Length: 384
Ligand code: SF4
Image (cartoon, rainbow, N blue to C red; front, side, top):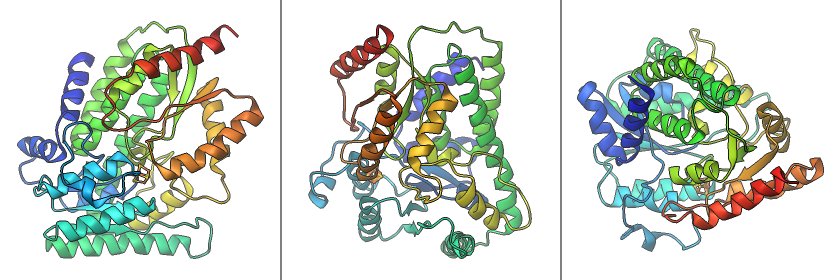
């Protein structure tokens, strides 16, 4: 497939609601069910090993009008929480076996409870991910939490999820993550061959495909991109930070690029590419996943790591990317992102790294003001 065809297929997939994406996958994998995964992280391998397709549940974007969910939430809340609940209240998630949330913030915790109450027929899991990465009990605790998830899911489905199946899924997801890292490396090294918006479309579309299919697609895409001779544009090299949960509209990323920024790295869809390296595959795959979560995950504002401050994580990311500035792109009312923004901004000011904050929400439809703001920021750096 050509790069253009792959890109169009990925963008088309993002136009679908989660249940429609599942139904599309079932045309190729008729016996597979689906489990929705609310960001940021869940052990996808356990879900896949259970014979289900993990499907990224990043709200409903601008595809659904809110008519029920607004009444269940206060007004100052991120849009992903509202539109996700709306999907459940409208019965749009009935095709799924269930949904998994994790302990990223109070909003996600309340959302999980609301979904459980309003969609009693579904299996709703809430993972308590560790807050302390370095206690002597962290490894056992995290493994036990993944084991609890496996046991509950197996009980719900009425079938076992053996270690051997999880290990096979782990190998597959290692391939997907390695190829995704390669895609990011390629874009960083040769920004002209693929835009950040296209990379984002591919990676997010990957959360709506079986990993077998996504691994093939990435292989194909990388092969084609390596043949390309993209021309690098002039612009300010930046890192995007803050969109680790609710995902910005694709048009926002396109606008940032069109306004003169070359996005060298980002934390978009980060939960699906959380590990810096392959996870070792051995006879205790849940132990390996727990170890990878504790020791080999990239930083995010919802993963608390006392010994590796997130401010250092951002500084390192900027250095590795060879970027000269940071664009903060938090979702409106996203508390973890906005709290971290204060610390990140302070650190960047100390190091003299320019930065700009652009908040977004799902229903953002006009980008003119953002474009002007980013253009002014980029020009102030280029002509300084
Ligand atoms: S966008 Fe932020 S506040 Fe909303 S659910 Fe995600 S992490 Fe929580």
